[in-house]
Amino acid sequence: MRFVGAAGAVWGIAGVSLLIGGAVYRLGSVAIDAFAYPLDWRHWVFLVVFLVFMTVIEGYQGFQRGFSPRVAARARYLARHPRVVHALFAPLFCMGFFHATRRRQVTSILVTTGIVVMVVLVRQLAQPWRGIVDLGVVAGLVWGLVALGIFSYLAFTTEAFSQPTDVPETSGDS
Image 1 (cartoon, rainbow, N blue to C red):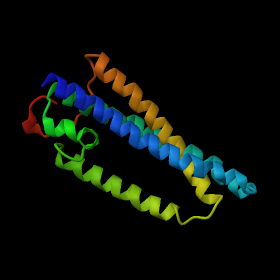
Image 2: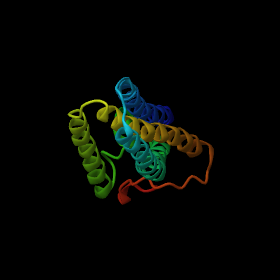
Image 3: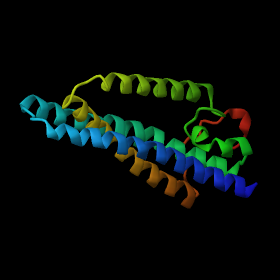
């Protein structure tokens, strides 16, 4: 079972990282395309403001203070409390879609739904606006990917890693 836990933890972190990295790759090309259009002062002001906003709100608040440490904590939990089903679906487990407190599950579903709605809406924007928005999103995602790497490293190299796992109380050690 130790192998199942270790493999699940690696798969969980790798799967979440691939999900984020894939989004960075796809959105990055759209963001770069924005610069093929003539940008006036409104575009530049929005670009700077939105870039700062997304870096702080998505990158720092969303990823560094919430999502990334929790994913790492849940991967660590999986390594120490292995279950085959959790290991098979480790990325979803690490993101809190199952075997999580009711609040965490609802939050994970609502945030994911909100992201899907925003993606659909942003795709309706014309360039260069879409690219500018995507540039802000990419900045936040890159911050989140770096934070996930750092927290994952800390989760498996320090005993004092005490981020919340949001597993149900009946599961024992959290």
